Length: 316
Image (cartoon, rainbow, N blue to C red; front, side, top):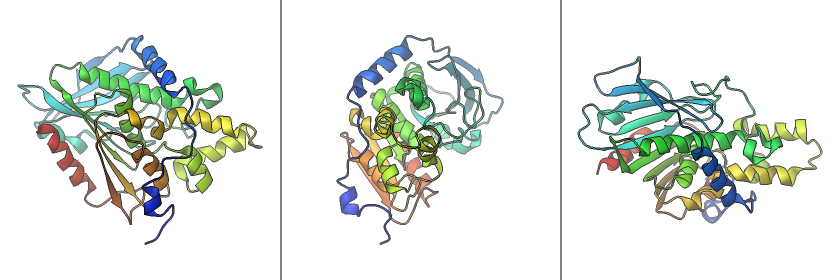
């Protein structure tokens, strides 16, 4: 079988290379405390788009820095008792997509939420998408990191959903591809009442491994750009990767309590397989790893149907 990374038997034991900051837990507990000391400013209004299959709403709230965050909210019609909820986070540089893309969930009795990540191609934040979000703010330390804010946005959305009277608080789950896979895992670690997680080839993991492999093109190109522009002699390389450790998915996942399903393609050159196995192998809760030997960071035949079948189990 072709191989771009470690052999599969070694991948199944690999737990990561990038350092974990010694004060990782304290840093994120302080961040959550900071978040919950700020006003959420939730506003929910009927969306312009409507359909006979479900009720559609625009939901906005304020991030930790008062940034406006936008969410599509699709609810089943005529809710008579609390329903499960599925929260999806999108891939890097994207948005929550069209309303019609996910109507199948509320039509099946599952509330669905799609958050636009700030300053990407959606309605959250005040900037259009630009490159450099991975390393954005890192020169000022982990507290200024772009992804610290995004992770906290995701936690705030979960907090809001947990307070909704029509939502079954025991069956709130997260879903995402790539960047969205990372956020679905991190948010479930920071808000560990999340019931289940479905993460497809998660991004934002084991940055030092990506660097050593030189396989991380596209989104991980920003690592190379950072050194070229800000540290051309690599004098601060160790500090740089330690700072990235504060947003490294593999450093969060041991705190997940819910069941995790993860998908990895062994031909993934965008998010190398070892960086994904580093995530999976550090998960301590019940888990399943679905492996596609011949696929990379791409659409996978039959996967959408598999996710839908997984989501139907939230109704049981």
